[in-house]
Image (cartoon, rainbow, N blue to C red; front, top):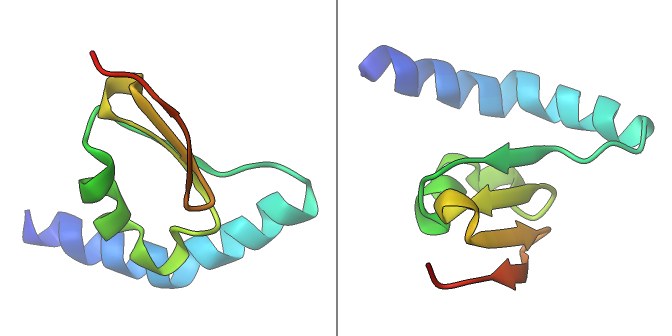
Length: 74
């Protein structure tokens, strides 16, 4: 588990910003899709949370660039 967190932190701080720049250049949106809750996912992607889209809570919530655009109670 510690290795996962280390890799995730390194990726978000180094590789992901470079990848986001490439996405922006190609006018592509970076989307995190997960069954996890939005509040948990935001913690993982804190440095870039306002630049990406989240599909969370098993598809019940969609947040784009920090703005909730869809929510449905399941």
